[in-house]
Length: 114
Length: 110
Image 1 (cartoon, rainbow over the protein chains, first blue to last red):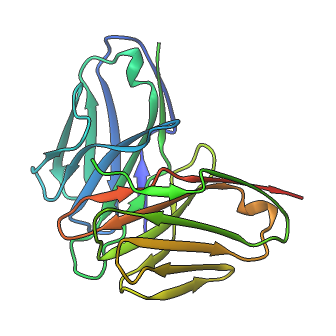
Image 2 (cartoon, one colour):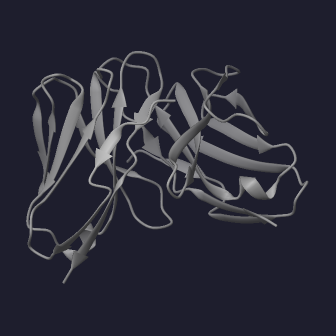
């Protein structure tokens, strides 16, 4: 069974705190993604990575950074949390193999910044 | 980034009815995916389509990859209460990004 695991289901953080969201996949996938999901706005891509130590900005990277030191782990960092970063965060992974391009999601992290 | 046009936005149906939803894109894709998301959970993959014209079933779910490669359809037959949730389409071409629909919220009335 494929598995993408996010470290926390719920987080409450204070404005200005540095926040780490962790994601681990056990499928040996090359690609990993971080999205945020807000009502009426759908899924928006923050960052993605197609290899260890590689990262690409998505549509809304401002206020975020990422780290991919190992193939199975992709971390999202909020350098200084703000209330407008309150959201549902979703991690996903996929293979680069042709004909096998399915994205698998973690269970999500509901982050509240107060 | 591109968001796919998904319709309808929401549906309220009686248990036992069939459901249809679709996604359209201005770009062609090599892969179409359909997901279901329960409240507070991550999306779960339902069906993957890899070939234009392909029709694939998963239990009561059937999805089709449009011939133009710019659209896809999902049908749910004989709906039951546990079908409630938000359904998303996703498209993928070359490169690594996925593009998602805006979601269809399904409510099934017992």
